[in-house]
Length: 260
Picture (cartoon, rainbow, N blue to C red):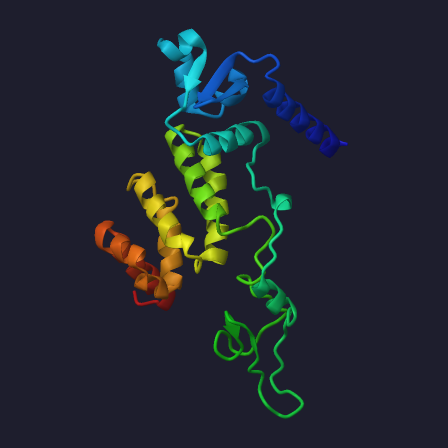
């Protein structure tokens, strides 16, 4: 009963954004105009609340112009403010790849200490995992997370999550930052090998201040776990230009191997 009521409320909020009914504020971004509701958006964004409340052109015209932002990102921002989430939603995506098909044919895999021929398990499940090399031959229902990412993740979403974190930081929407960070962390686990990762890592460092470690720490942790990334020219530039990144990598490795 409660769940049904919550779904109905969510549907009402989505309809209010789509129709603009009872709107008392507009947000523009290029050619896009959103007829929004101050009670909904200003209660979640200190930036929007200030623009609508304090004397100025925004409060006089009841319009906040976000034309400096990317229209596609602003659209996702609006979705979040009214739905509490942004696309791609988990149910929206299907991941089909040759790697997934290859891995699914041998997964889930449980190691056997000795097989029928008296040999220890040394199966290469996929290009990311070989028993005895990536584990101590102690897999239990193992499924490669790189070959079989959970629904709702794609390499291209790394950039989306980074940009949503950035706009959440700029417009002071802390809850959006929390969600974008969680989605970014999940995407890093599965797509650190993708060629988009170094570029997104650069954006993460350039788009937020040094005091905001939300995405910085995730990038640092990812590189520390996959040191082959330092061979990438883009990551190499980051290591030489971003203060503290190399030290952060050292700390990550030190904690993992208990150097100190």
